[in-house]
Length: 268
Length: 326
Image (cartoon, rainbow over all chains, first blue to last red; front, side, top):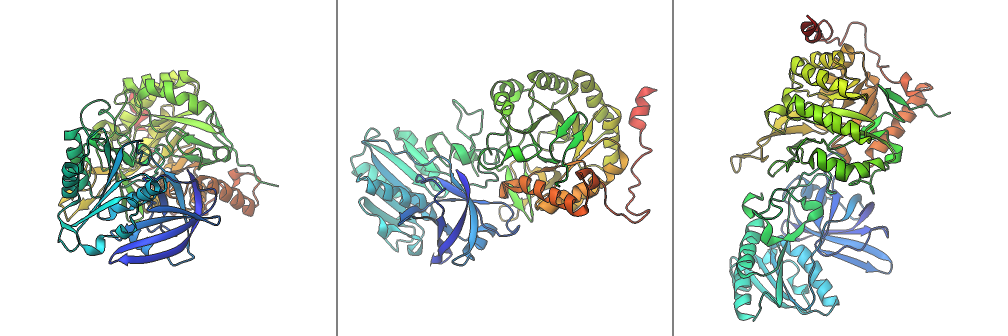
């Protein structure tokens, strides 16, 4: 984890309100794991004042040039400013930060994406493909324009769902998971779940996994101030049990955590 | 010739007047790859309480216009955990270490001061009598001169370490509290802690912070913090450590100009981890431009028109001390 300057290589709206920004990072930026994030100073002066944590959609290295890619929706002050940066602009970031996904050997990874939560899972799917590991990719979104990146899924079995039925199955990512689990011949001993998306969806997926004893890692999202574990501003509430008397910091003990331990009711 | 930057806060000698504020940098290790501690005066640790605290329910932070609301609730390992796990880290730091403590009552303050003094790791103790996020006792001791006296007079005999009382700005006359701390043995006062603030989500009709109320920091509060610091430097003779909204290096100079002996950099460090070092550079350059041999020539050199900017709340409010002597 270091503080580095980065340069905007491209920044384009890939769907209404959703942007893909590519940032060139120097060699001092170490190779990130899928699920890790960068803490980006999106504003040049004080608007916005604090940095914003963004999960990585990918990391690329070609001919000595290193770049990270972020897929984001314009939802507030920070993302609005980030969307406005032209090619060539210089920003700085702290990263890579946090704990990423940790697939275990000899288990089929089932990736479950909801909306823009697809970003770190696309990163993970490319890593799995590089390692020639079979996987399942389940992607649910509200409608067609939100299905960013699914055509790039290679080397895995892909199922798509939309709330409005405009593409694929009509339903949610959780519906896809239930169907995949019952028809795919998976067991808690030979498969595990990696998920990211709205916390409501993650809550449902986590309940599904816990009730069946399936290992399930989720990438969480929330406001952060320091992103290095110092300020304690991003607590993750845990379910009663071992360790429930404390709040792990989402930034350094997450953002990827055991979903079945998270108390989703108390997580904003 | 480079100007001398050393300042003294009681027996605490700082190589330069820039500290990192409590709650920003943890216990020193969290930011080790991002902040060059050997370049700054020192750090103030995250506040230590007697018993471990899990902290407040989320959300704990929220960005406002040019500021940040927080309600962390002093998540910390407690005195025993601090002595066991944090002291060995702090011992290795290449800068002054000020340990911040906060008790729920006078007895707890005493136990904390004894524990921190005994650890040998502290160069000074910051007495946090001003946290707005830990329930009624948090703010209590620095909103009443008599209660501030109770804490200071109880802990003063327990240590020879410099005691820095950290004050809340959420009072009508902060000078009165500062004077009470001075009278009862504080070597310095530091201010301001955060302003009590609140944020509302009209969409959900709910407060945004998990605890409803929180503390506001960041550039939004700098003018308020300067005014409180100005009020206090006129009222007391002990050193004043100024803070609140320092965001650019020149902001640190402003606090020194109006009379603060040192400054603490807080929230803005989250955005700009190099800020504390940049403040040191700016103070050095500014002192050089003044032609002063030492930063002492900068401190308190604000040119104020005669008779203007006088805060009437200062002086003549020594009742806290006098009252108890009689």
